[in-house]
Amino acid sequence: MIDRESAEHELTDLRGDSYRRMAFNLPLEDDDPERPWPPYAVETMWVEALGEDRYRIDNIPFFVKPLAVNDIVQGQRSGSNSAVVWFSDRLKWSGHSTVRLIFFSNEDQILDALVEMGCYYERLRQIVAVDIPPGADVERVHKFLSGKQDSGDLDLEEACLPDSFLR
Image 1 (cartoon, rainbow, N blue to C red):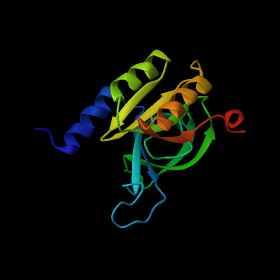
Image 2: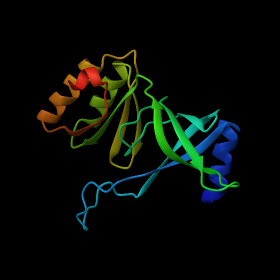
Image 3: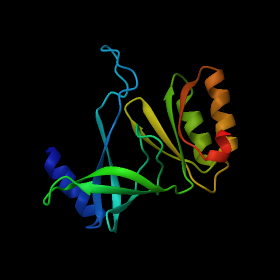
Image 4: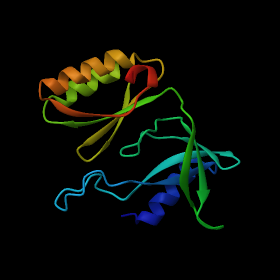
């Protein structure tokens, strides 16, 4: 069994020296003591260091809004020897979009359809974070997911979509 520190060290070794963990404070959206949302105070993501306190997001955000894969962000280390970088600002949107799903039924079929449409996903317990890359048809994906939400298969959260889509 590997402890958390060893596992993080191994992951850092696999990703290389230019990768860091970036921490994001999460504002509480629902303060119900029985079911607070989000369920965590901080989310961490892999980022690639680009220099001058600039970083590129390297995984799909589960809770942070409005960020997506490959966005360029700014961050600061909390101390000179700190391995964690704290998020301070989004500098450039990458063109990727992010939606989050909680499934009630037909999960495998829906995820297969999203992959066929060019999307990628990551899972954290019952939450699935979906990356819609610039080459995928975000309107088609959104229409598909909205239909699945209307039929009761899933709950959908629009975390990061293009401004032109939201108008």
